[in-house]
Image 1 (tube, rainbow, N blue to C red):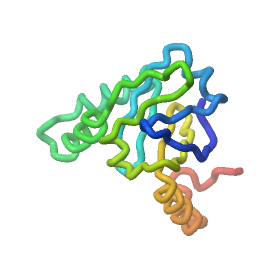
Image 2: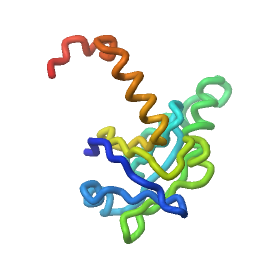
Image 3: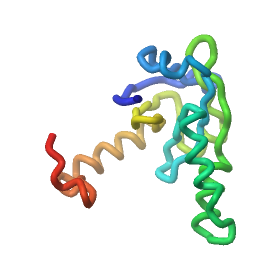
Image 4: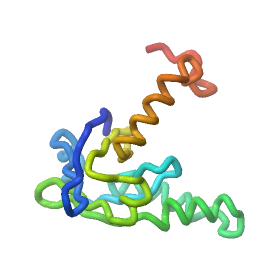
Length: 146
């Protein structure tokens, strides 16, 4: 399970060094999928966790406009990548452009996968979240006790 947020840097070739605490879970196959998210961040999935999501997206009708757009975004941007021997994953130039990634980025664990945010967009997300106060809880989670 991937949790926690880490401020990291992309290297000059656009590679992201995955923090050591996550490498054990990823090292078995090292196969990853990096794709776009509608919120202008990237998603990084172990391939086996991505496949059921991809299959569900692909099952949608290409004639239904929202389904077709979702396919273009999630599957169209998806890239198969491999964790290298130094624990790095390449973030392709088109994905870096899409998410406005420069050198400073945030890797945010989301359980089965990671989100990868530009520093500026992550700060905006934080401000938005803090500004929501009690409205942050979605319907059905109002009784969540922390």
